[in-house]
Length: 369
Ligand SMILES: *Cc1c(COP(=O)(O)O)cnc(C)c1O
Image (cartoon, rainbow, N blue to C red; front, side):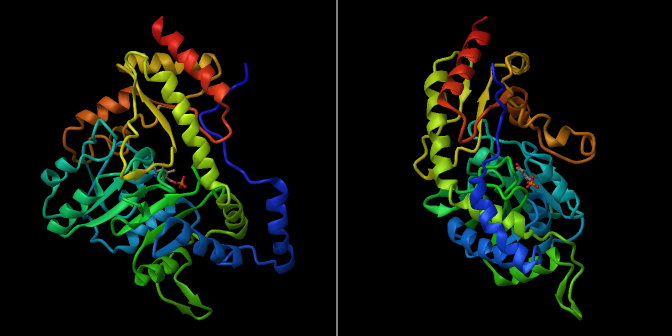
């Protein structure tokens, strides 16, 4: 039996990419806001339906610099979710801010907005929420809370490329949103990312942060770092952008196929896609098992059959050594419940329906034994 990995990088036709990057051998302009970089910034702004966008070298630096661009007071508290990739929490801490972990909801695994206000103190400066698996946070309620308490809102939309809420691109909510274009994401530039926002002041600030603060040969205006996207990555992004809609449709078909085959298995909880306000991107296919033992057993047994799933996200970021017992949090009952039981199954556009059949048959057999 062939192995089935949890994800597989989407790539354009080889010739298409090679044809596009030929011009780089003529210009020798391979980075520093070249033509491909600028064209991709424009095209992504259009695709995501956002007023402003700044490309970055990766999603993590997009988040770090996005937070930095908001100029929050050092040592301020940031209410956030522990059910995410470590990048989210690291980006808060690396900005000199203090994460305060809030519980999540058990239906879509996003931050539980009803528990945010009880965590607000006079030190709270922002909320960093995650559209986890492309599921949309309760953006309306979160904005209401932020307005009431004068907080900034940052969305980690690393999973949510192409997602729309009430027909509006997901990058329009909050003060800033960030996207990841890592090889494993729905849309990739090999490595890459972007910050979206609605003020040209933030565009200039981010430009400085990602380019050493250099405006011209003799003018350096800020203490910037280096987080520019290079031309090879941007060219990959231009090619991949042509296929992203088709790829999302393929993902959607596979998710439907999964659901039809798994919905009647006892003890399995699947995501509910019935929300007319949300246009999904089908980034991941998470399933929830009855208990931790069952999850771990299924993970191991699938692995023996060369089917590689992922405990995504386990552990919670609040439980990893650098944060455990060092930061405050409310009771994370739901986050622990989900993190102990979650398993993400293989999903990528060129996964075959017959491979989904094989995965589902294995799950069915393993769970009935
Ligand atoms: C992938 C990811 C990131 C980081 O993006 P990179 O492009 O890998 O740096 C941040 N947050 C979440 C939720 C992610 O899944």
